[in-house]
Every structure is written in structure tokens, then in C-alpha cells.
Amino acid sequence: MATEPGAPGPSLSAAAPSGVDGVEARPGVPKPDPVLVVDGLRKTFDGITAVDVDHLEIPRGLITALIGPNGAGKTTLFNLLTGFEQLDAGTWSFDGRRLDGHAAHQIARLGMVRTFQLTKALRKMSVMDNMKLGAIGQRGENFFAALLPFLWSAQEQVIADRALALLERFNLHHMQDQYGGSLSGGQRKLLEMARALMAEPALVMLDEPMAGVNPALVESLLDHVRGLRAQGMSVVFVEHNMDVVMGISDWIVCLAGGRVIAEGTPESIADNEAVIDAYLGTRES
Ligand SMILES: Nc1ncnc2c1ncn2[C@@H]1O[C@H](COP(=O)(O)OP(=O)(O)OP(=O)(O)O)[C@@H](O)[C@H]1O
Ligand SMILES: [Mg+2]
Image 1 (cartoon, helix red, strand yellow):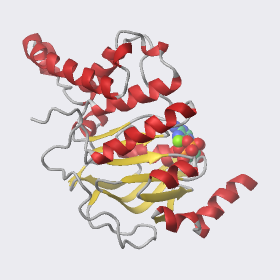
Image 2 (cartoon, rainbow, N blue to C red):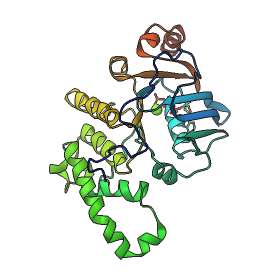
Image 3 (spheres, rainbow, N blue to C red):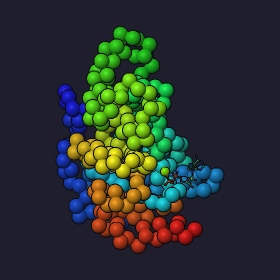
């Protein structure tokens, strides 16, 4: 067994085998080795379109930034793909397996986890218990196992060891007995990322992991995101800071009005007319 927390499973390669080299910069473009494929995904709220994605492929083993102005549908897209919101229409496949119709905990157990724009660390629970919840809620959630304490205790040491290793990696181990609520905003973001890794995911979706974080912690968070890629995970993250996006991403997807209006490498997105228009349009309104 791999001992490194979050280490890639046997089905994952450590390096990006095919990447996005030579992939054309246009919305909906196919990738050589997508980890996630979305088709016809639609969601409206009271008649207002929040998400309207015809086709989107997320490359495996790379860092993809999801950008777009406020209200573009980024969080709603995350919510739909991870089972936290009901869709109106559409399908998506993760590692070739259809996930539409699956509940959030099933999706997480299959290896696709997300963090939230507003951190969900439980304030009245210790940091360690927050981590354990990541394993219970996302991985070992099994009604019968919960009723059979001997099964549970066999798992518990493994989970505690794993949690501690992750807390050490995220430099939170010294706070393991403190309440979630006593952490700084940045530490809560770190805790949420660490907790997501309890599920041993293959794809991690981070909704504004850097928002509201003290600049001193941003570099550390970015290093952790790069670390996920180095371990063979695929990462999708939402971010508004373009310096961060341009600096860390292998591929960028831009949403506006729920639609994918542009996709490409950082170089191709930097001067993309549709992207510039989308941002200018919202600034003027
Ligand atoms: N639960 C909801 N009920 C009604 N409307 C919603 C709901 N969630 C999102 N919306 C609407 O859907 C659209 C997309 O919102 P969403 O939060 O996905 O955007 P976003 O790209 O994440 O924006 P931001 O960058 O500000 O986080 C917006 O018009 C928003 O008002
Ligand atoms: Mg959002």
C-alpha cells in the first residue's frame, strides 16, 4: 500500500501522459486523456440560466483553472458535478463512468471531491474530528458499518493515522485538538483541502481556495495545489486572481452566463477577446 497520504492509486500515472500539448484553444475542445467529460449540462434558477455547458473535457493529471466573472456559474457547475445540486439536464462521466444521478457521497467515494467557496469546516468540532468526518462522510459512509463498532474501530486507526499525516503535510498537526472555529481563514482553507484528501480522490475541485487568505499563506496553498498535481491528481480550481491563474494553470476554462466561452493554455487565454469582453462587460454593468 502507498503510505503517502493522497498518493495516486494504481490506475493513475504520476506524470501527465498526454497533457494538453497541441490541443486547440476553443470551447468544448476534446482532450487526449480527459478525466471528466461533461455533456449538455443545464441548470436554471427561476428561469435564469446558471449553467449551460454543451461539452467540456477536463484533462487528467493537470491543473485546470475555471475562471469567469461573478455569477458566471462556476460554483453551480461544481455543485452539479459533485452532486450538491439537482440538474435540469445533462450527463457527465468521471474516468469513463457516468456520474449523473449519483449522490454527493457516492461521487466523492468514486474519487471526485470538492471544497466550498465558503469554508465548511465545523467550528465546534476539533480539527482532527473535522478530518475524520472527511473520511466518514466521503469514503467509509456505510450504514451497516456504522452499526458494527468492531468494523468501525478496525478502520479508525487507519483513518486517524491518515488524518495526522495529512495535518502534518498541511502544517496543522499542532492544532489537531483545537476547535475548527479557532483557525484563521487561511488555516480553514488548508483544513478543507486536507479534509478533501481524506477521501483519496483522483480529481479535486477547489472553489476559490485562495479567497480571503492572508498573502503569506497564498504561496503555501499554491504549493499544495501543485503538490496534488505532482501526486498524479487532477485539479480544477476557481480563482479570480489572474496572476495566480496564469502562474499555476496548465489549462484555463472561462465561463460566462453559464457557457464555456473560451478554453486554452494561459498564453492563449491572456489575450482572448471573448474572455476580455466577458470581464469588461460585467465591469460596465
Ligand atoms: N441556489 C440558488 N438560487 C437561485 N439562484 C442561484 C442559486 N445559486 C446560484 N444562483 C444564480 O446562478 C448564477 C450563477 O451563480 P454561481 O454562484 O454559480 O456563480 P459563480 O461563477 O460561482 O460566481 P462568483 O464568482 O461570484 O462565486 C447567478 O446568477 C446566481 O445568482
Ligand atoms: Mg462561486
